[in-house]
Length: 233
Image 1: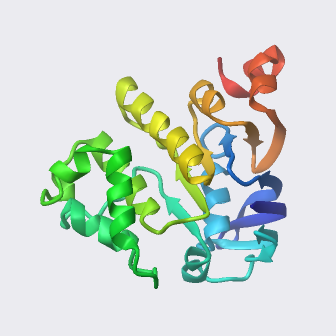
Image 2 (image 1 turned 90 degrees about the vertical axis):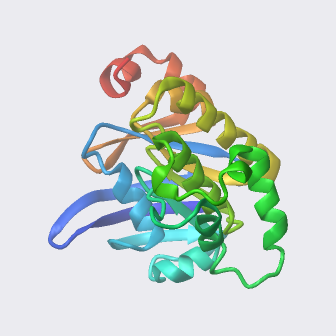
């Protein structure tokens, strides 16, 4: 589904990623872990085309390294940024419609019902302003808005950030269900390594803008030296 090879990226004259390579297979959840400043968010931004980047980025075999952010979204990449970033002054329903604005097919109504299956409270709050929702509800709305794009790849940046443990559990359970039901690839950036590795099949640990270690999630969880040195537990 997605392949990065020796990707270098940054902001202005500051280089953050120093040759990152990773793959995300179809129908699979992959996590990117690391401390603050390791380059996790920049990795997602490089894929989305919103930062300066070089190296090879391929989606379904298609090179997207020089494509615009709009074109990458049209090709099926949905990026839910850190904090969720809903449209505060729009209603829940209007936020969901914004998620489908790039689509050219007419089957939006079916997807609207589908996202309500994953987050049932959406139908009860459709006329409520998004800015009045709780933090957890805003995070779920942002994910649902991303799903309205009908993406091939869903990218989530720190979905657990600032949320209560029970809400975090609900969010990750929904992500696992969505990936399984829709056959969707998910790339999730997360500081909560224990939580992310329970949900993902494969993990990459970034350190100073480069991949320090990678492997299947159960292998990373079981390796004491990896856990102590990179995962913080």
